[in-house]
Length: 320
Ligand code: AMP
Ligand code: MG
Image: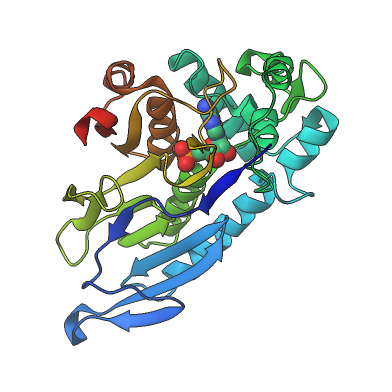
């Protein structure tokens, strides 16, 4: 009999942004008169997006761009290009969708398949899409594994067409879309001449420029309720965390988390609890943190070495 003891969904990675020690929901103006900045937040992309900037118009620019990307890339929006592609198995897509899928394929190759956006049917099967969690029968997992593999996504560069090799395949950009969307927002901010802003998209962070002549200060907490925590000071860098406590359920005393090992079809079991990646761009930080979570400490660190300007903090079970 199925017994689920505890269900938990937490959309925030345990990254806290310190802005004068305060959190604002909605809109706030803080700082002393000469050092005022605006803090705006909005629920989007399944999480809380918070924008901090001295420029009043920054939040509007960021929210507008994230909304545009969400409408293209979210599997939860039936009209999005990703949903249409998942339904039709072939679609002519926008340059953004084509770009992110191409990058995701590259990350899949680089990580020897640990990162793989074709995990969509597995994420559904385990109930992480509709939050109707279940431990599937081994047989069902094995059947679905035939649909998994980024080599089964065919890209036609000239026509900007994406095609699946097999019907039933589905892509899930949950491990890369927020990072890419934040990069797009940063590009838009720069186009508008805004060069100082902090974006926190549910733990996917980008620090644009400086805050009053000093780097942005981001607090990283390794594991919820653990003693470990630390700060990083960043300028023009992104931080992302992947953790097994973000979304999980427990059934019959066993814990199942939302990051799937595409090779086995089961939740990743590499002994890692949380991975934080600092990178020059959001897409890299986002994709890499998920890939390293699947690969584990040793192989994950080797993968990170392939990237310029990347720093990794891994918390494994043996750190506790
Ligand atoms: P993140 O929080 O960035 O590590 O992304 C986790 C999300 O990415 C999950 O909730 C799934 O939607 C999706 N996902 C799960 N496993 C993988 C994987 N091995 N490769 C790529 N995406 C994944
Ligand atoms: Mg990720």
